[in-house]
Image (cartoon, rainbow, N blue to C red; front, side, top):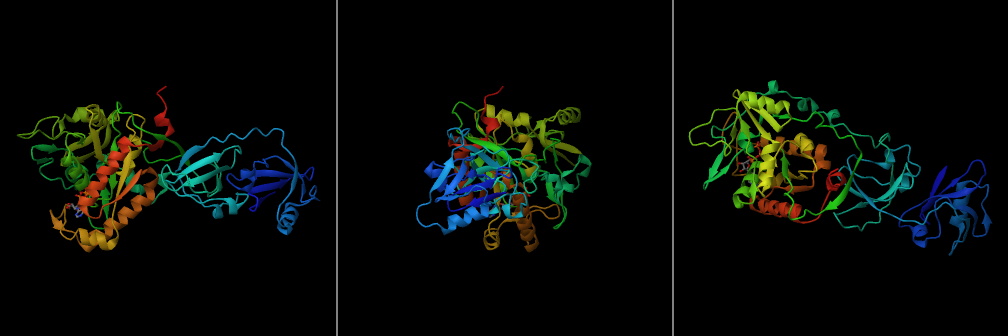
Amino acid sequence: MTIVIIIIGATIRRDEETGGIFIARVIHGGLADRSGLLHPGDLVVEVNGNPVLGLEPEQVIQILINSQGTILFKVVPNAAQSSSSHMSVYMKAMVDYCPLQDSSIPCPDAGMAFSRGDLLEVVDQSDGRWWQARKLPVLRVLKQREQWWSQPSPGHSCIRPLTLAENEDDAEDKRTLTDVEELSFDEADSDVTDGIYLAGFRRTFRLWRRTSFRRRRQSCTTCSPNSSTLSTPYEEVALYQRPPQENHRLIILVGASGVGVTELRKRLIKLNPSTFQGPVPHTTRPIRAGEQTGREYHFVTKELFEYMVCNHRFVEYGEYKAHLYGTSTDAIDDVLKRGRMCIVDVEPHSVHPLRTRKLKPYVIFIKVPDPERLRQTRRDARLITNCTINRAFTEDDFMELEETSHKMEAKYKQLFDSVLVNEELQDACMRLGSLVHQAQNEPQWIPVSWSRPEA
Ligand SMILES: Nc1ncnc2c1ncn2[C@@H]1O[C@H](COP(=O)(O)OP(=O)(O)OP(=O)(O)O)[C@@H](O)[C@H]1O
């Protein structure tokens, strides 16, 4: 049995065979830790002159409670205790954890709740079953002295590996091209402004349209068999600063349909088209007068498109009016190789296959503002649906947008590096620009596997 002694920041346990009372754990940053005098495995002989051999841990606690002023421990130090060399490891939580719901935690009071996406500094991994760590309240700021224990084992009753397919909307994740229903592509698939071609925007390309207010059918297909599965409760992360000679990180925008992802992406690219660019999509539709292959689209045959599908070359693809459309990883590479920043918007389930060492994606979630601000800011906005082109938002649209946005955030927040609330358009665009700048030029947390040199 282990008992936590909050006053001294340590736990004790009783050896059932010998009746000896041992220090089980020293809580990092607590009184015992800071004194440097108590270590895990030390045998406690006396507390304030009272012999403790054979006592129950509760009786030892009683002695402590009754003690006034200085508390004196007589201990036999654990010979095997190595000099404490704390090497912090940083983890991003990929699951939610609540110690109060965990029947296996020895001391729920010392446990700490955390949510998916939280950054945790693991300060002690000496116990294989329970780690000590603290939550980092803000990226790179290591302030909070909040202590917790958490079990690294994936077999944990609370921290169990999550499979996103367990979620309610996952029927939608299991799509095939035959699921494709009505889509509302504009006749003009690309946008030309001031001589700048903005190919592949989601209004015309994202392949995601509502067929009714309440029933959304997602019509694009993600090209990774494991894309919806997160199988680890933690992801080890490290701070990474992109060296100037390396390609820019891929910028991914994610958000509910209608929240303004297309608008923001378009504005950002228009602001500085020599810096920002979207990947040029592939299509099997015939080329039209005035179009150039490789500018609006890569115009390819159906056979080539299908070959590319079979070879997992698309991040997302779908079909509209008997023509196939897709965003390829090669098109993303092309932008990056030219030294530009590639900005894509994809469905959140398509983020997973893009999470590679090479692309080092930085994911920005575009979030709805609070209900009042949403309705205020979209008063004059126009929405494109497959029923009516260019009509005002209705109350149903707002409600659906809010619901989808909140669900998306709840389900995928562990994948987001930043959250951008799209309130006032100009301001949101400025903030997007500064987030992208930070992602490229300032240290950011990335999975350690992306920062290691290639084997
Ligand atoms: N902050 C904002 N303030 C006012 N209007 C906005 C704002 N953000 C977006 N809009 C407008 O809302 C409408 C929908 O935006 P947008 O087309 O970018 O949505 P989306 O997230 O790309 O969804 P979809 O893929 O379904 O088109 C557009 O008319 C856009 O101009």
